[in-house]
Amino acid sequence: MSDLDAFIAGLPKAELHLHIEGSLEPEQMFEFGRRNRVDMPFKSVEDVRAAYEFSNLQDFLDIYYQGAGVLQTEEDFHDLAVAYFDRLAADGGVHAEIFFDPQTHTDRGLPFSVAADGLLAGMRTAETKHGISSKLILCFLRHLEEDAAFDTLRAAEPYLDRIAGVGLDSSEVGHPPSKFANVYKAAGERGLLKVAHAGEEGPPEYVWEALDLLKVDRIDHGNRSLEDAALTARLAAMDMTLTVCPLSNHKLCVVEDMTRHPLKRMLDLGLHATINSDDPAYFGGYVGDNYRAVAGSLGLTKEELVLLARNSFTGSFLDEERVALHLQAIDAYVAAN
Ligand code: ADE
Ligand code: ZN
Image (cartoon, rainbow, N blue to C red; front, side, top):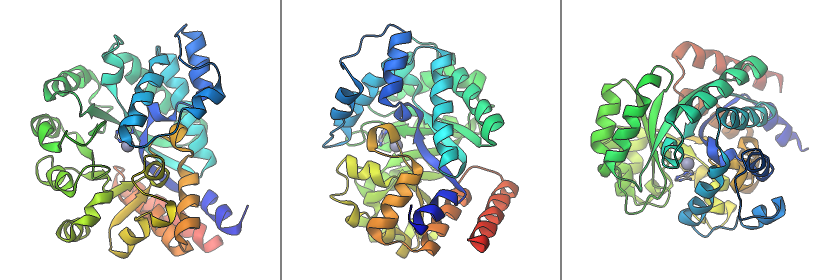
């Protein structure tokens, strides 16, 4: 391991953009498929991995929703979450704000409680096992109608004391944030924080809408914001956190190759960027792999990597005191390394 890789591994960090269903490794897909007697269109783990060639977001989503079909019980969701947190701990992760897609599960007949209770149990296990803190964010699927998002918000009602916020994911182009303005307003009135995927494949206008109509607290991805100088200036001025996902961007052909990834440009423009894994089982790596990939291909300095780790805490939904403690831990790590 190079010195920089070792430095990255030990650097305290948070992950703010992780779809828990996207952490389903092919081996687990078979394990859950077997124990739940779910038929799968793949014969082997190698077959599954070979199918992970995507030319855009939709290619990936088709296979991702199919994979999620093996998740049937609370135990599955618990085990999925614990496996993710084990990986995070190995990567120096100490906090995560994880997404789940309730509609992917309720639309195939599972009660809302199966995913929610299983994930919340997994989050408690991670706290005990690794001392990792976490928050849960409920995502609405944007290819579905706003009425369906309202149904999901209603189903979540008994859990709102344990859900930090709402997000917006799935097929971006053709499903602008404006489609969800009413349900975001309702979520805000219930005290939920708000994030939304915007500017991954969609145009800068979608990022404007996420800011102005949804009144989001964070933008997920945000890459295409850089096409609009006024938007970039606004994001920098308001210190809006962008949860950037380098390996995802490469796998989904949002960027041509990693040397052209916009992360360094974002930092140079004063944007509050963070590094995240998105769907690590599908995109070739967890959060540490994402740090290493950009460090290598963009030639990031130690100082830039430390800034990215600091941004992951200052952009998190943790309270100020906890953020300050994590920043102190980074300072101590940097002083010792
Ligand atoms: N759901 C899971 N991963 C996603 C991504 N990268 N973009 C949109 N929706 C998603
Ligand atoms: Zn995502």
